[in-house]
Image 1 (cartoon, rainbow, N blue to C red):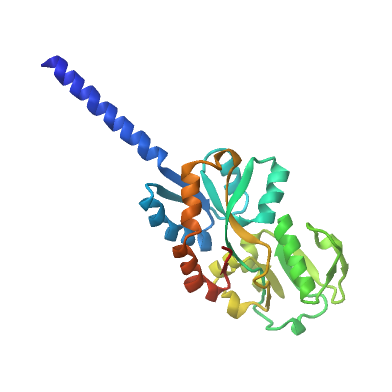
Image 2 (cartoon, rainbow, N blue to C red; image 1 turned 90 degrees about the vertical axis):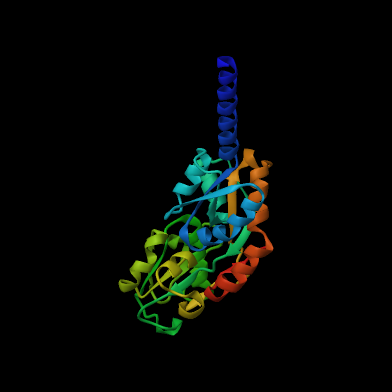
Length: 262
C-alpha cells in the first residue's frame, strides 16, 4: 500500500509539474506602449487564447527599453515602433531583432495651443521635435513638406541638416513622450500619434498638418530573429493581422488618425 501511495503521489507531482511547464511555455509576453499598441493587443488576446496561448502585455512608456528587454529575453516580442526606428536601433545597439508583422501607421502631426494654421507661425517660433534619430528626421520632413524649412537629402537628418530656414525657426529636440507637455512653451510641436492621443489630442481634429496615409513608417511586431519559426510567434502574427484586429483599427482608431497597414 505504501508503495502504491508513493507511486500515486509521484505520478500526481509529475503531471502537475508537466502541466505547469506546458502552461509556462504557452504564455506569450509582449512589450508595448499603452496606446494604441496595448489596446490592439487586447483585441488579439482572445484570438491567441483560442489557439492555446495566454497573452501577457507589459507596458512601457519609452522607446528604448522594449527593444533591450526583447533582446535579453525578458519579452517574447514587442509592439511599439516603426520599421526605420527598429532598423536604426538594431544597427546602433547590435541587437539580433527583426520585424514579423506590419500592423498600423500612426501619422506624425504638428500641434499647437496658440495657433491654428501654418501661416500663423512667425519668425523665431519655437518648434519641438522628437530627439530620436528616425522620428526626428521624420519630423523635419513633415516641416519641409509644410514649406517651413528645407533639409538636405538623407534618411537620418537632424536640425543641423536644415539648409533653408526662412522664418528662423528654433527647432528643439526633446524626448518623444514629453512633447505633449511642451505645448505650453512652444509655438508648435511635432508629436507621435500615440503620445498625442495620450495627451488628449485627436490627430484628425487637432493637427495643424499631418503625414498622409502613404507614410512608410508602419508600426510592427518585433521578435528575436532566432524565434521567427516558433509556433507561438506565428500564432501572434496570425492574431494581430486578423480581420478582427483590422476591423477594430478601422472602427475605433481611423477616426483618431491611425490606419491599418495590412
